[in-house]
Length: 336
Image (cartoon, rainbow, N blue to C red; front, side):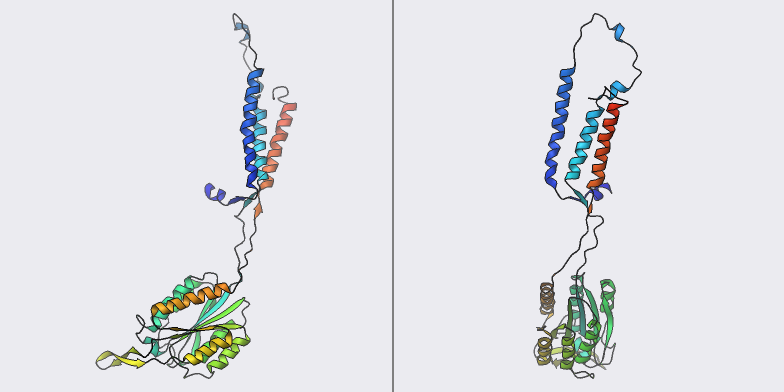
């Protein structure tokens, strides 16, 4: 416990610790002086000198140098300006507010990603969330319509649990990209964060909802929300599980990513479009977004340090005052 407290102490002027070399030098000088002051006397008997010593004063003759050495030690430490970090304020940052808008339509069950697009997207997004502990992050899901699964929060444990719970079928099937983006923007419009971001992930083209994707992008622009769009799906065809009377069978379905619209959304809002064709590519995209957003914000930290030199200086002055009083009263003539 004590070691932990001292580990939090810093010194603003550590160069003053060189003055500590004065203490052993002064003590050595004092010892040498005492040896020179000791006289010698030869007598045939010492019986006449063997009187009982009733006073403690002679035993305290070295108290003066002890008090002065301790005072000097404390004054040197005080000059080094110890500062405690125990009372530092928590570092605060003007962080980034991020909403992940994830497509959960039936086509996200295609298995060109492992185990499928939806699960791969969830797992990689969760890793992304864990790497950004200082940002508020929210989650919007969409299919035929959209809703907020988790509002902006710094409690990432709750967010991750809600993210892990999403599955296909939570809303009517379809791909309402415009509605998903509009819902995400609605969560960010009142944010005072220095940077507001939507990561929009989909594997299809808009075929549901009352808001066109480009209109939603224009709304995002008005609220200074930057949108990174991610088209997920391999090129050509992808195996898609189909329930039949004989059980689950796989059919190769064409991949229908509307790259033109996704690119336009990103361009309007000042973001960027990415295409993910497998797990590793999707992970790389999240890493790129992570770096892009970290580069766009200057983090300001506010610290508060507590100066600790004053108590040391006061104690040192009290020691010197004690030595002065004793020298001139109780131990007068005994202290040197």
